[in-house]
Image (cartoon, rainbow, N blue to C red; front, side, top):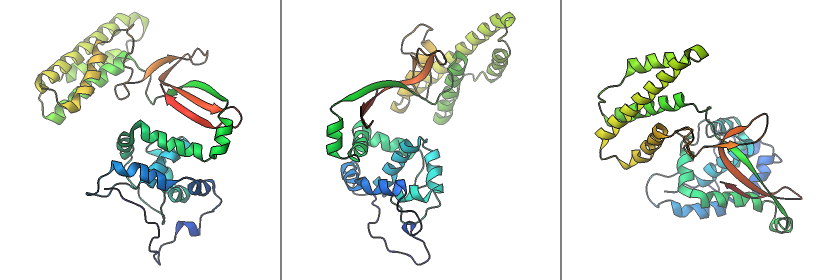
Length: 301
């Protein structure tokens, strides 16, 4: 059930209203007046039912999504900013100062999935409408299009890291489903990790390659053991197990390789720049007006 923020709240004697001590000329206060929150709530209200536990208010979660982009923050760091700043709380529609998170940071993921790409476009449209339709229509006659790499938060991918993560994922799924693997290879994996860590010198390169092959073989055995005992594979694990299989079977020269298990859509993109030849992420395209630099289009390719 959709929860709504109070329009005319019942004021309390022992609580101070945010508007009584914040600066009304602050950038977030001015921006909050310009955004059409009612239209956003009207757009997203059909995505919620009419019964059940009240959801997160639309203005609260959309406001935090906008603050994430304004200040270039993450799902967890924007929550810390929310707790510290009364202006952020006012922007998200709060009447009184809050001392706790409005919701768990993981709810951002669920909300983005709920509204989908079309919902994000509606939020993006609000930022364009702030400049006024007449100005945008005048400026949009001539636009510039540029592409860049949107980096993902992953470490530099190596065969050893990916193999170890496959092993960790297999063991985690087995514990969650109550499956007893034939062997866990705990002692062997610990020994191979030590060999891989201290065998990077040229004279020990053969030992390093041999240890890497053994670790890869152990990961494949654990994967096959897990899949055999899970048969039939539940729908909730099919996508994850497919990614693990691709990691174990991909070759050096393959296209569309997996560089991160938790971000399988990450690609290795050549920048062609001397200081940074490659970046790991996805290519993003932006269209902005020539005069004022108003972003009128954005797309992740």
